[in-house]
Image (cartoon, rainbow, N blue to C red; front, top):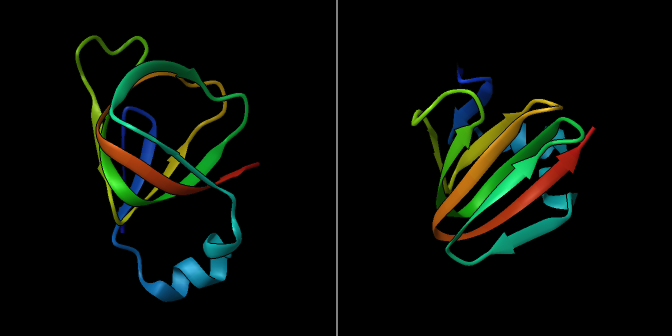
Length: 97
């Protein structure tokens, strides 16, 4: 069951059949060490975190954030501006539409 907070959709620990249906394991991978940086989504991104823990602060929501972590299937909308605060190094599969 996906939930949405501050425009970010998160599905915690989706069933492996969903991961397979989406072709997640064939998507490119990206990773980074603990850091903090601004990011703008020029296209809708769906990603699946293999490792890590991040607080995402969408622009225009003050100190509010969405925390994502290993096992989360996450969808970021096109046009979102945010800051990523990576607490635990990230390894993820991602797909832009």
